[in-house]
Structure formats: C-alpha cells, structure tokens
Length: 342
Image 1 (cartoon, rainbow, N blue to C red):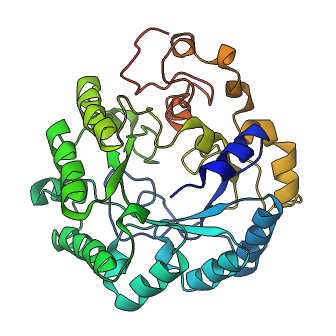
Image 2: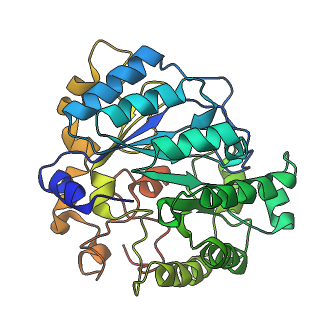
C-alpha cells in the first residue's frame, strides 16, 4: 500500500518516503540463504530511546512510512510501543515479518491494528514441503503451515488482502515452476500478491563465494518467473527492482548496528553510524546524494544498455545486487535478464 502522491513528491524533491528500520537481528525462520542467521553475534544496538528519536526525526523528514524490519521485528518486546508512536505522528507502519509470530492471536491483532494504514508482509518462498525443508534445513515443515494459517486468520479477522504481501527471495535452490506455483497459490487462495527479489550474492557473511553461487538462479528461470510476476501486477514487464526506482531512491535504512545506508540490503562496513558523534539528521543531510542514488536520477548516467530500456522511467536495476557483485551502487544489475551487454 503506497501513497503514490507522497512518493512522487519525495522523489521530485530529493526527499524520503520511507525509513527501513531494523529493530532486531533475531529470527526463527532459518532461511539458509539469509544474512540474519549467519551473523556471529547479536548486533542489535538500537535502544528504545534511539528508536523513538529516529521516529521523531522521520516525521521531520516528512517520511510517510516506516518499514519495520529485522530479523523478526515482532520479536522485539517494545515493537508495538514504537509502532503506536509512529502512528501518532501520522506515519504508516509497514511490518516485514517472517510470518511465524502471527500465529499468536494477540500479536496478530495488535499488528493488524497498528498497520491498518500500511501493510503486513510475510515471507514464504515456497508452498512445497520438500522445497521448504531445503530452504530451511534446521526448521520443521510445520512452520510452512503455521505461516499460511497466520495469513488466513489475518484475512478472516478483517485485514484487507490488498494490504498483505508475500515477500519472497528467489534463489537457485528452487525451480522457476515452484516459484510460480507459490505466486499462483497466494493469488488464487488469498488474493494476495507477491513481492519478488532475486537473490543477492553477498547476503551470507562468512560463507565462501563458491558456496554462494548455488543460490543464484539461472537467467532463463528468472525470466520465466518475471513473466508470471508481471502478469500478477497487471503489466507487460515488471521492473527488476522489488519496488520502482522512485521508491528505491526515496527510501533509506538504519540497521541494527546503527549504520545509515540507502537500503537495508546495502551494508557497507564504512557506512555512517548514529552511534558516532553526528545525529541521524546530520548524517542524512551530509550523505543525501548517496542515500537517494542521486546520479541515477539522470538517465544519461545509467548503464549503457539501460539508457534505452523501455522500463527506465520506473527502473534503474537493483542497486543492492550491483553492490553485492562488487560493481558499486551505480553498477549494472547483474541479475537483470533483459540485457546482457555492458
């Protein structure tokens, strides 16, 4: 659920529409490809007071929505206090949950109430029990059915289907047909759309690059999945971003360790940090061009084969995938199947 008028204003004014805010790095989902279950130690350094200040600063920046991220944000004991404070400042709450906490009726009810003007995004990349076990080798298959049950109960209790997403990561561990089956299931069973991201190769710290290669899906399979994905969204071809370039540019992130970055999946070790001697607002002002991908607001600076692409009004490729491939934030998106020249 996007306020497109507010997003348009943020884009045109080099401002921000959304803050991605990581409030915990613990998650029980156990996705084998994810960075959150690969970190060596807990790095959630944001206090409740700091989160409250970030929300206050978000209002000062005219931010429309906070994307509550983790790990699993619903595992933080104070999460509903923060969501309530944001709602009181007329900031939308968008919750990105693995889905397992929604089996708790109290958590489900409070989440739905505080996200009533936003969205609830769950994460289920497959509905096939065998594939689920491959993607979550340390977790029981019953979790798959628990997540589906949570979605069903949300809908039965009145939460709108068009404010629910199934946010998935497509990896080489499943076939294109399995990913398409999952998209079909959520659309046909619940009238819920899928938000798709194609695997980022660096999102598993401590894992050798050679092992990460198995997570990268084949380009032809990506094309098959995106054909179905585009159909779901009612367009001929959907951008290779998980969102359009306007949303991507008008979003910034604060990570569990206090880092301020353009996106929660762009995680440079030398990012500015709110634990230093500068405030969040100062960091934003001093790093604005980097945070909004300012250079790519002019099409002449896009990668050569993107400059004439029919999608460049709404797409500049995934900046995180380019960063992950050591191409920098302005590099060509290595997972885009549409163009193969540089």
